[in-house]
Length: 108
Image (cartoon, rainbow, N blue to C red; front, top):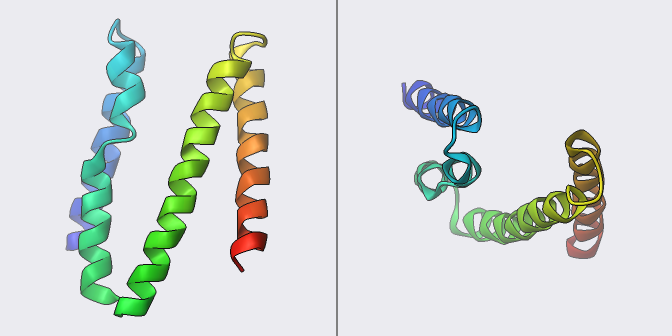
């Protein structure tokens, strides 16, 4: 039942982001997908189902992922001033993928 509730919450956040992206509230559209409520729900699940060592490793990976998210958003922001939005997003995703593979090789 907990997974269903979390699915509904996550889906609601994405629906709200979509609606906001089509309105004049572009700031909220960009911020809503990074809401800490989703992180808190995820942490609740992790604490219930993980050992201390697994939880610690998961948090380390979360930090790496958060840095990757910043790289993705900043790259898209910078690229979008020089390229079409779809090209900027693809280039940002490419940079993000390179970062994630590189960080996986370094951490592993």
